[in-house]
Length: 116
Image 1 (tube, rainbow, N blue to C red):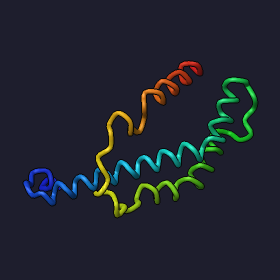
Image 2: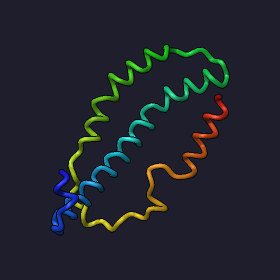
Image 3: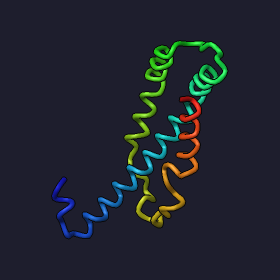
């Protein structure tokens, strides 16, 4: 792997660029799946913390249900192969296409500060 970084061959740079885009795409899909599939559990925990409504399941039970139902789909998303159009796309704009924008970070920070 270290030979890839020290090589001056143009095809090596193409491989590295394709691999980087694959990792970014898979990470984006994985985060979207994980956050959307666990909204019900997050809402239940937030209601427990904010309004002191009792939990329908304990924290460990929720963890085991998540491990049993989310693990295999998440692994399959993370190991997805490269799309055929990955190298024909234009480079992404770093200010617009980010995994976490400032709005997300600000929102989650405010929620955490509110909880604590």
